[in-house]
Image (cartoon, rainbow, N blue to C red; front, side, top):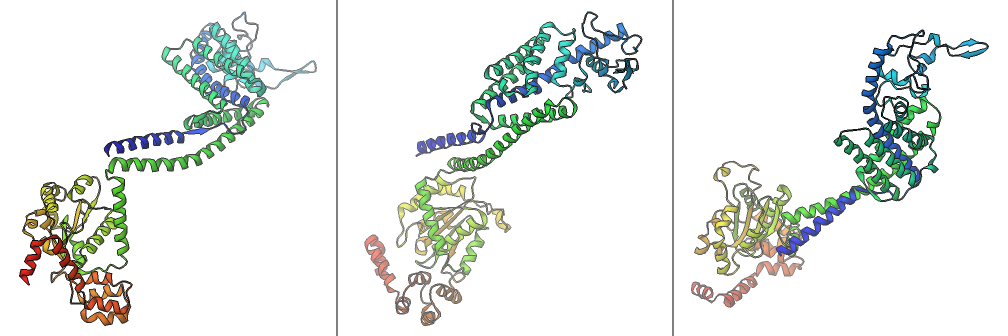
Length: 575
């Protein structure tokens, strides 16, 4: 049985892990995204989120050193129209573009020979920072950044590297290739260009640039790893492979960032970026739709996962075999049905009150006086009001030893503990042998009896019904646990009152039948059993049952004759 439970637990665990993995994944094979658009998107994300931040770190210190050098050699921070640096280096065929700094682009043009030309004499030629210095090497449309930060995009960064001689030739070559083969085609948004070969070449170019920058090994490996991750995820994204939820979230997040960036370009530079921004918006909307579909699927899978985890928890905590669980459920179901005709008596209240003080209660009395009905009712109260687990004891004290769980609130219920008509000595010996272990489970701390509250209503409870003559057996009395707290339903304090008997009758019969049996309702101890037996009987049958209950005595005597000759002899001698 242990091996079977272990195998079942392994199977449930594997199934739960499978569902948990599925919950983290999304199938992106369906949808209307073209393969070319997907390639275009992934390359754009890498260019904006990996290459651009890397180039900002790379160019910033080189520009700062160049600025300091030119301040010292050419006084560019104080220069004016009469003397300013026109080219750098002097062999450069391109002039420095002072229109890009100091708001010179806003200087009014002047008219010469009926032509409007820039008024270069009115320009402010002072270069006061390395940021302004970098703008001199770019077209004014590319120089809208205010620092070497997020406002400085890949176009400007690549332009600086290509146009400024301070950068290494290999890096300049890589930058030129990325600008001409990746960045410019990406900005023109011609999706037909983005073939599988171009996608592969783009990642190779970006990786080569990273290697030529001369980064520390750790930083280089980190950046190359990020590029490889996007290249791999991009391939999966393109092929329709199931992707992890985190990856899809990342693609969606980066697409949103890219879209916001392009939106700033739409308002500040050429109109070609309007198309780029629209395409990114469409992609973002598509991804959002996929995420919503995933959330619906994930919710359903989450419920399945929770159910599996709950089953796993029960498998770990619960060592009661399934077939025993079924039997317990059947017994408890019968008890619940009996509650429709159950009447709370003063004995019932006494038993419930005693549960606050004692963890083991034995309810005694004759056959049919309501012993089992009362302990069943008490167990259901513990379950419904104090979240106890009910465990009917089927095989004796071994059930308690095997099924006890210190992490749960449990109530064990034993009907007719050591037999009915005669004592079952083998069962009694079992309870005696296990009494030491039972004492540890159901021990009651003495100081807890001094205060009545819910503090010990989490302790394990043992509810027992026992025939009075069996309870009084000397061998039974030797078991301390079983005699700690007795509730005798035949005692003057707990026996049925006349009004309680009437209430019981009202659960089964109309008033005209009750009036006929009133004269005999105090004559028998097994009155609750008579009420139960009279259910659905005619008025004549009911009256006969209550006035002549000798059949019960006959049946008990027959059982004693067949099962216990010594007790039968003692009974004859008593007569």
